[in-house]
Figure 1 (cartoon, rainbow, N blue to C red):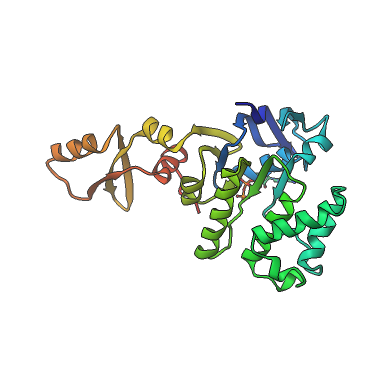
Figure 2 (figure 1 turned 60 degrees about the vertical axis):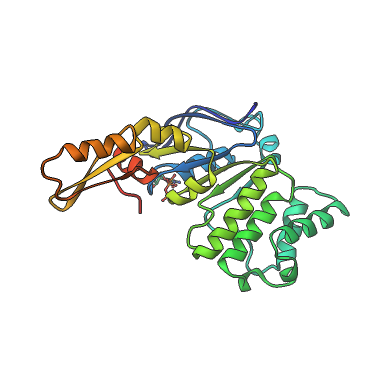
Length: 283
Ligand SMILES: Nc1ncnc2c1ncn2[C@@H]1O[C@H](COP(=O)(O)OP(=O)(O)OP(=O)(O)O)[C@@H](O)[C@H]1O
């Protein structure tokens, strides 16, 4: 497999503050990669560098085989971007937003019209094509952003917190779209605060904290690294977590305790691993 995205020793410094600190990882073609981390971890800054919106202070980034500093235009032609702030123009119609993006990417007619139709159908917005974007719901705006990001047929899609602020049903609908695109071969990187989102969607997970990548692997790898069985022990008003390689060993530990008050056993999950790694809960 070829690396679709590659970061080598990437740093980003704002006003003497290092917000991305020596980040190195690769995303393979066709992979769905999730960057998870608390507020301020550096996820958005990483996505902004990967999508050429800001330059790394140090280090090398290649996207679709192009260096993002030396070949930003070629890199941009190969990526689609859905950022946190809904960046679709509310005073233009759905169709006009797509049309504008198509023109900016020099997609000629009739292909432009055909692609606009195709992607609006795909995200189920064809019947709203004449409506002003400001009349759409949050979920519809996000679907429009995705359709627009796909219009120039990128190989890699970057999604910065794609489901933040959406109701559970709308999140599910977006997840289905994201999974379907990935099934069609799209390489994806998404950032999120939500554990269930990465557990459901991502092949591999990178956990960031304080600008650093503190863990990287599949969910199964992370669980086997930290332990699949968990004993929770109440100490005062806090829970102490004890990891065990598997559930039977966690149960065996509990059985050996003469006083089991305030203790319980369960399989570990990503959130437990995150808390263990960072000492913090996610929002
Ligand atoms: N343009 C900027 N100038 C100065 N500092 C910045 C700038 N952009 C981001 N930062 C700082 O960089 C750090 C990382 O921010 P970033 O937005 O990348 O984190 P994040 O993991 O995406 O957080 P969130 O989940 O809240 O979006 C923060 O301390 C933030 O204040």
